[in-house]
Length: 101
Image (cartoon, rainbow, N blue to C red; front, side, top):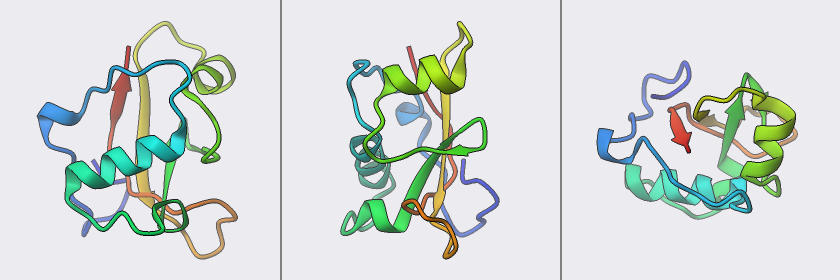
């Protein structure tokens, strides 16, 4: 579900869970989300961003780093997306939950 952005759609239920390798990078997850939402993928990293525990994720981070440094829970990793904020130094994002095993 989008984080405080009413004009961004939620991910379809079938795509809310992502089984990805620990080496999967944030930039690829952003593209995955945009594909599933049927949004324009052009300049995805500049227009959208992913968050974990309210921390904006850098596009080069991978799931293993996110799990070890930010999530620190045994449960599924939960990410949100939103449009990138104009003052944010990192790519934009739309909020929706994505879980990885």
